[in-house]
Image 1 (tube, rainbow over the protein chains, first blue to last red):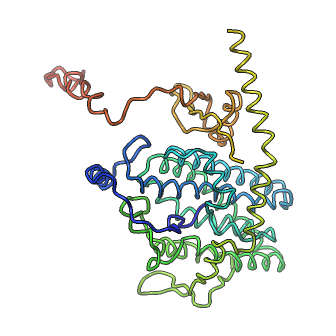
Image 2 (image 1 turned 30 degrees about the vertical axis):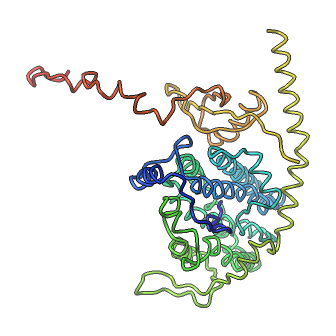
Image 3 (image 1 turned 135 degrees about the vertical axis):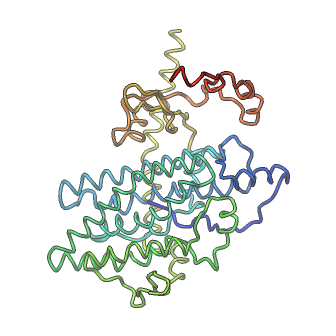
Length: 330
Length: 95
C-alpha cells in the first residue's frame, strides 16, 4: 500500500547547503545514477526529506492495516479470510521494511513511531476513509493498492539505496494485493443485483480519494523540483495519476461498473482518458485531520501501542534476566 | 512517554541449499530468540529461506566508505591476478 505525495511537505524550506564542494560531488553522483548509502555524505536537506518521506510511508502501511483489519473476522469465506489476513500481515511487513530504511538516516524507530502517535507525522489520507461494506475490501485492493503500485515502482530506482531496496521487496508482494481485490470486485459484480450494487457503491466512494493519493497537481506541488533533482521522485504527480486512470478505466469496464465521473472520456489526440476536476478541498480537509476516520485511526493506533506496552516491557525484562544469568555463569 | 529503544539486528537468509546467507534487512528485538522469530515473520513469509542468521548490528565491524579508495587500491592495481592477463596461443585450445 502506499503513501501519497507526502514528499510534498507542509513546511517548504530552501535546502541549506553546508558544503558547496561536497554538495556538488553528491549531485554528480546522483546524476550518474549512483546509489547513496547510509554512511555516505549527504546534504542535511536530503536526509531530512527522505526521513520524512520514508517514515510517513511506513506510518501509512501501519495505519493502512486498520480499514482492512475491520473485515478480517467478517470475511465471507475462509478463502477470503485467509487472503485478507495474509494481505494485512504484508502491510505490517512493508511498514517494518520502511521503518528500517528510515532508521538508516539516523532517527531511531522509537522517535519515528512517537512522531506518528503524537500526530506530528502524517500518513496517507486514503486510510481516513471508512470500510462499511465487504466490497470496500475489494475496492481497496484493486484501487488503493493499484495506485500504490503506480507510485512505488519508480521508487525502486530511487537514489537512496535502502529505500530503493525496501521498495523492491514491497513491490514484489504488492501484486497479490491488487489481484485479490480485483477478484473480490469481479465476484461481486457477477453476483446478485445487490452484490453488484455494493461493488458499484464502493467504487463510487473510493475512486476520487484514490486519484488524490497521487498528491496535488503539478502546478501547485512545491517540493517536486528538489525531489526530482535528487532522483527521489521520477515522475510527476499528474503523470502517475494519468497512468493510473489509463490502466484502471478498462478494468472497471470489464467489471461492468461505472466510474463516478461524468467528464471521463477517451481523448483520441492524447491517447489518454481525460478525467474531471478533483476536489482538492476535500483532500486538504482530510490531510488536516478532518476526514471521516482521522480521529478513529489515531485512537486505534495509540490504543494498540499502549496495550502492547506490557509485551515490550516483558521482552526487555526477560532479555535482561537472560543476560544476567549468562554473565553469572561465565 | 517516549518509547525505550530496542536492540537492532541484521538479518541474513540462505535461500537455497548451496547458496551463502545473504543480508536482507534489519529488525528490532529484545533478544536473539525474538529476533529469529521476527526475522521469519518479516522476511520469509513466502518461503524465501531455509536458514536464518540474526546478528546484533553493533557486533558488525564495517569498512569506512570514505576510505574505499585506499582500502581497495591493492586489488585494483594487480591485473596479473586475472586469467586474461596471460597469453595462451589459440592452438593450445581452451584452458
